[in-house]
Image (cartoon, rainbow, N blue to C red; front, side):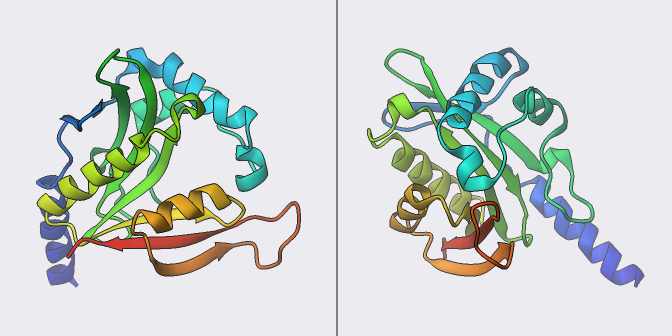
Length: 199
């Protein structure tokens, strides 16, 4: 027992060394760790999705002060030993005018230590269909691969057809499982776990 706990601590320390950098950029975007000063603008982006179809596809809206809670406490996966140090919320800005257009939330080392989990990815609808989301995924895939993660995992609600099309086109083509309610109805929700292999 002591040996396995010791090995687990060693493995978790390896995750410590494999975190996304605080700042990165693509051709058109800056991607940086979110800061408390951005809460209002990031929450406004959440509210745009709330007004659209988030409740319909997922069964609930973003809560008030969701972003503030994420920045202060993280939004950790349901695993023993989850640590806020392995969680990041990243802001996405346009380079040409420094406009905040979206954010993503990630967790390093979930659902396994060689996995990188992308839990939330939102682009302001006004800036969608410009290739920015693809740029972010290409950047994240490259960075995560350089950190020696073997795969990126996501969960997509089955009623979110737009997201299912986007993610499968982006290379998330291995099904990990289907989770949530067993029977379909207007008031039930399930999501599909998808994976993109990096090695």
